[in-house]
Length: 297
Image (cartoon, rainbow, N blue to C red; front, side):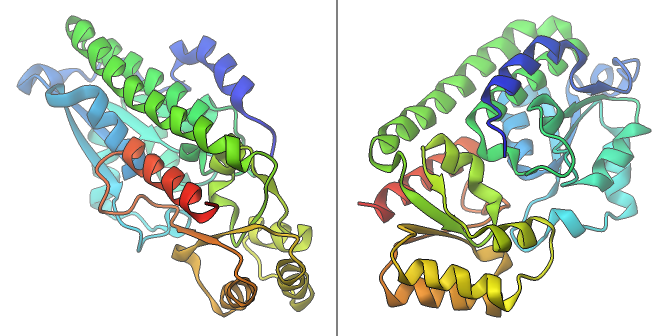
């Protein structure tokens, strides 16, 4: 996966487009009626960012709120589609992660913020862009600009909330820099590449066997040879840290984790959807950075 930092920063220059804009707020009736901007997000990790950046000036609805739901395969209800199409601002992840939401947003009279597009990540590339510090900041800026486009009179409020959110994100990045002093160049492997952007931010080197990595990226089953290469690498000490996506556990991933335990390779367990115990994306990222730090202590 290409480093997206430079792309994300460059994308900010075009954030005025807000990735894609179906309409510029001719649908202002919701805001005019009750003084709030109606916002819909496909997943709660972006929905919590939208709420933090809008406060009482926005009403945010997140379609997916649970680690028990796979956004890739989610079948939206009629109610879900209605929530998206009634919103004044829609936040989708993009890059094939929530194609159902992207499709519904295209016919809505709304300002659309597409996180992957803003981060310069295309369909077929790793869509889990909320794990990237650069994309988080770029998307937050795009959301703030969307709010200011929808309700220009509250620009000062939105700028202040953006400053507060940015301070929280900067705290996360300070922790990442601190942990990177210990993790830079450390070989890790993952049962799925969901957190590879976070691992890259921390300087970790991806040593996941290539055949296994290709299979999981294509959502196909790794072959027995792929699994053997993975377990052999763990037992040979070539992999110093194992990252496990507990949202997609199976008999195959069980063989990998068993091999890691047999030679005491430290593990970090995580999910691709934000766990319910967190009320913000920054708090979740901070918790994950702490987990990586503790695993390699």
